[in-house]
Length: 139
Image (cartoon, rainbow, N blue to C red; front, side):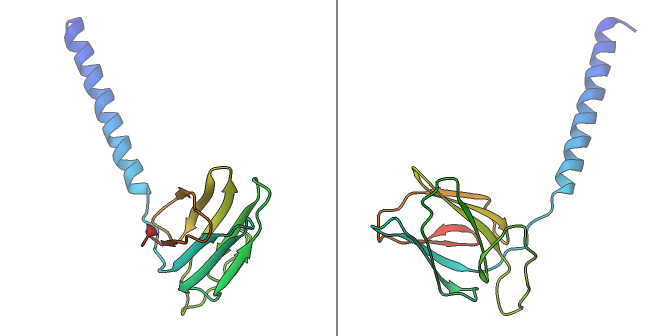
């Protein structure tokens, strides 16, 4: 067997191993179960962040003053929470967990459970609400 044939066989084996590993990794990922919710996010002139839930929550309005840029607040269908807490289940409510953080450039939301999105970043003018749901930013 010459060097060229040997090199091609080695390359083919490496290629096949790589392809089979990619297929295994793709099979390991499982889709997240989505939870229907609708939340309006709004900032005020006083640096407050207001959330209003109109679908899928036990709460109606949450107001935050996240003055510390490193402060992260977890929110679920029951309101403010800790992202490590066990979620209570209520079949009449959605089952979601998101976090919110204020930055110099706006807001960062992370979808930890019940969302199709993992990261939303946007800025808002005061008193100009933005709707978010399980699929992301919406109208």
